[in-house]
Length: 147
Image (cartoon, rainbow, N blue to C red; front, side, top):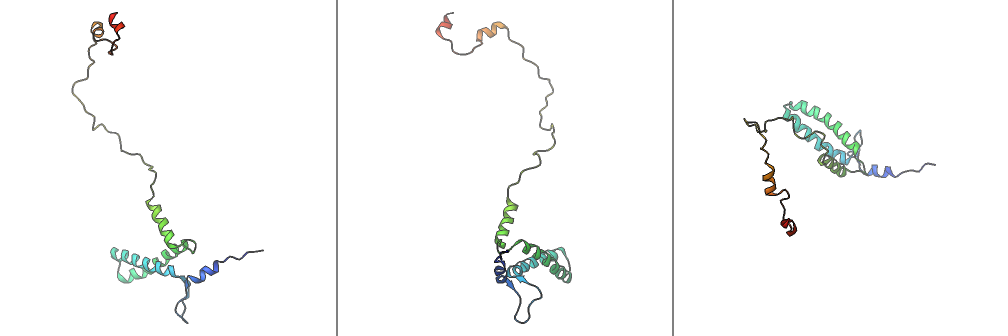
């Protein structure tokens, strides 16, 4: 036994078929018309900035608009509206990413200070000098001071 869903109810409400007695040969949702107008203006602006002539920019603009609008509208539905898809797209673009490249570049010695003379060891102190100063260097107790 098959259970019928209520998807047809949602599809009917969001479709504009065209003017009375002169319907369009295709079904387009209201959101598709809005997305199409915005995409067409955006594509036309880019094509005119590229220096394409007016006739070809309009002709290719219509073709590109249809392709982009169909792609965008295939991602949205009554369960996932355009606003949530746009918010998801914006969050995906601005989300922090893991850095895959290392920080810094090649190792160079440009900041290493170089002197003309080679560093020498300090001469060792004699045992007498070390005992005068005291190896512990801390405070002595009265019994240690007597000894």
